[in-house]
Image 1: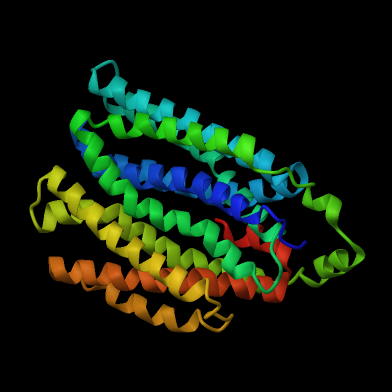
Image 2: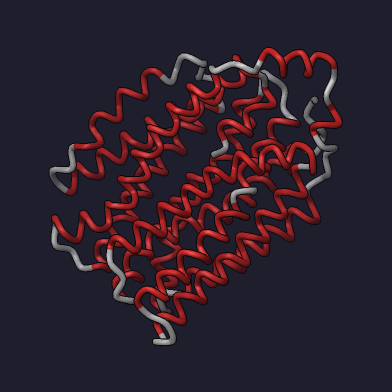
Length: 346
């Protein structure tokens, strides 16, 4: 499908939708360890909440990508944003109940785990529907650039999120979370009024598409998925444990550790954003380019000093985006364009 005349507006709307959720996720990662210490929860409790929600999110993106192709990308994007708003409100309210003493201990942990898991179940509809929309309106020559224009919102959100949380946390630990509800509702309103409807992808299929579907039923996409799982599991473990690493190894206070985690995430996100705008969107990537960024991850385990930690996150930002778009382009080249949102959005 060729790009419509309003494609610039479309990409801006998709960018804003993912930006709101990305800011929310980075705010969550920045403030969660501090909120856990405030509520007397252990590291195990926090790690379980984050890991279980991430697992549900990864599984949900594959499910929602299939639903979006049949129900329409705009409709499912609105479902994801609505679920994010409601889920964030429920999650923040559970924390408020814990801070006020209404619930504590195991009851608080279960309330947080359930609310966060329910949020992840619905909000996982947002990335595959946004990426799928970008794929649907792009040509093969512009596909990687189109995806990068949309998903760069993730890196911008990781830059804005920690600073945003630091600004609002002076009004209370829960102020950033409740403000995210407003941001996602604004994004939902923007999508509703400004994003054009697309016919479901299933209604657009031709005989060539059906033939390509048959050819795409190979083990190749699952190899790429397995490789991405290994890479991003390592990234997730580093992000989730970095705050506690600063507290236990460098003896920082929870507030200082949260600030250092936020700065490290901002460094990584800024590097990723540079890769996207200076490399990916200018067409300087091929399906072979993911081999080289893989090598850069070897330095990410050398957390021997504060400066080394930030340097490693700089390298991590470069490597993660090279792998993300290298694998994504490989999937589209080998397995058909329509499989991208189903295989790589998670």
